[in-house]
Length: 311
Image (cartoon, rainbow, N blue to C red; front, side, top):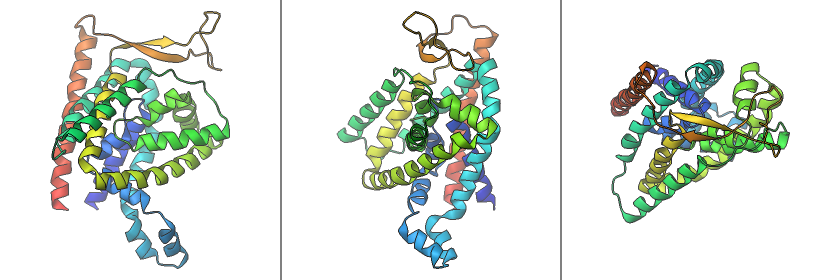
């Protein structure tokens, strides 16, 4: 029971990360020691698993799919997404620098803990690390698309976002920002439980999770050091996206006027990255919170190592 409680906590961490543009739920899974198990459990939902259900072999089905593990993790994710969407909307509006600082510290220390699990830094491992870093950095300079509630586009959003949500260093929420549908899905639809929006996204997410999990599981087993290396590169590059001190750049129409959403809010097309202009209380608090984010990862890493040894 104790292990399942900690799995729910890890799921809450993943869910919280998935709500934040720039932070990856896969990163939390990787640094808390459940990434490979999660991928293998998701990909176990195949024709054999379906056959076990229809033949009434429920115990075999539960064992094959690691169902209790998945239920614990996804319960935590669900709790976080449903409870934190409104809170994070408030925090980003009132304390944006502090929120970004917390996650910056979290990811910064994670880069070290994840990177140190590479057993041998060969030439191929170094090259894929650089590739991951370049891909992740390039995402920061992409221009977001326009918002769309088209059903097919929502399914595609679900597929792409779910893949990136379990891929450490690539934020599913940030991908939704680039696709123009972050606020529509993660804030409006989740907060108001808009099934018309959430249903096609969920269908796409299921397709993406099942399909991508097979590839990730295969590559993780066959090229483990290279996989961890490219994921470390993804994580390091994502630090630019979540740099706390930045200024929003708003999308302009051909006329020079701001492009507005239906609710009258300006659309962000990118960010101008800055340095703190003074060490006032606001800046010092952000730096302290950044350190707290790093310390949290240290504690999580320590607990993950402890419980993995117990298992």
